[in-house]
Amino acid sequence: MDLFLISNIITCLCAFAGFIFGIVKFFAPKKALYAQMITLAVGCMAFGRLYQVVRILTGGEILEEFQLGVLGVLGSLVFLFSANFGLMDSLADDGSKQYFKYRVIPLAAPAAAVAVYAAVFLFGDSPLLEMIVAGILTVFISGASYYNLKHLIFPDVDFGVINCLKTYNLLALVFEFLCVAEMVSNKSGSDVPALIIGVLSGAVLLAITPAVERGMKKWTT
Image (cartoon, rainbow, N blue to C red; front, side):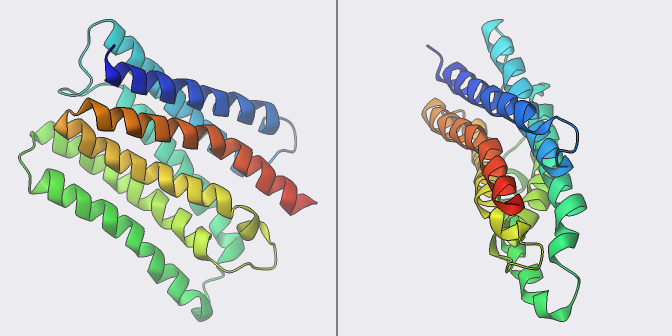
């Protein structure tokens, strides 16, 4: 069987399981919008992978031309970025000088993503469309990974929620760099790395919403 198909099926099923868990736990009155946005991030990946599974089964190509499954990855990154940037960061970082190094160190995450993009796509032999799609994804990976790394290393503050969500931020950071690895793997067209990345991505997506649920529960008890 096509290893690309197996990879997408695994990621799709795990993402749907994580998405359903988040729907059950977080989509109710007075539940945290932060957790709902992360659930929607996982949902975007689930539906994006579902599209790719259907496309492969119907004889479509997912590597050599643009396909709508990419929008699932993009939507997921937008929600992950928005949750931390719009809802959580202001609770931790008041803009004071004492936290300056915690604003600088996380730049390592976007710097790494941009470096990989430049080496593989910008200075490599890539079609223009591939460079554009990978570039857009890299921009959103950079933004999301910056805040996930920042909140992973940020010291606990009065509200305590940053410390409670460190496991989630680690998982999200791993997911974002699996997205980078997937872009590189897709360029090479190698199916074994694609399968490994698919399994790892599925495991992370399955774990993200339970990690948020445990973190929110720990914070409120």
